[in-house]
Length: 298
Ligand SMILES: N#Cc1c(N)ncnc1-c1cnn(CCN2CCOCC2)c1
Image (cartoon, rainbow, N blue to C red; front, side, top):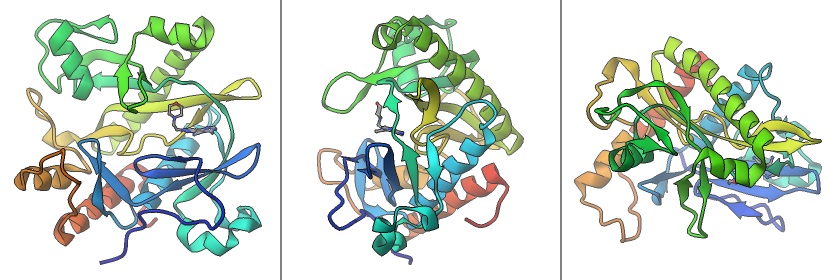
């Protein structure tokens, strides 16, 4: 079993932000280093085991999508070629190769630009409670995982320091970023989603929803963060789609099923995963990569 990289150690360089699965380092005033580790989270907890190559696979997926979308929106990537990284990183290239990118520092919008074409997750919860999602009223009688009449912009923001995102209204986005930027973020989010979901469909996948993050560089809105990865999106196998309940997660179902099989108490420390679950989950990430990119190798 290959070893998973759970955290990077870059000598005197310490991360400016450690997310659940990614570490962000400040290289200088203009550049950041984004590193995707092999950590995996489920039910909002980072698990004790990593998935070997997960970070590489998701980084290569983001790079595929940034290139796929380059005629629609500029992005923050400067290079993902480790040979072009600042020489100060040379001692750490074994940790970084394939799973990291140097990006332009942007003025980030404090909004998670979520778009949903299907009713799932927090969107389903909000719909059950109010008949709407982010203030957008939906037809009555929809079932969990039903396809929506059209994709909807359902932004979220980190309301409290707890780090959990909460769904917010378009008016809240206007308050946060101004009306012009709010309209631009909504338009870009829906336009990118349209292109990406058509591509996913052509590869046998339903892109149920996804989350984009945007910023500005020299006054221009750019696409940042990770893009259309299984961590930032819900991908469902189209041939198994069955509305009326939760759909199997393309990448995390083995993990979720295992955690439910051991009746894990989510207040307890996150457990490690059996080798079989790790191996099968790694295969699912590779399968997503192969389906989406049409490539066989990383
Ligand atoms: N990508 C990127 C990027 C960039 N290119 N320049 C400056 N900062 C970032 C950055 C820093 N953290 N995150 C993820 C976390 N989000 C931040 C926004 O608010 C929501 C959470 C992105």
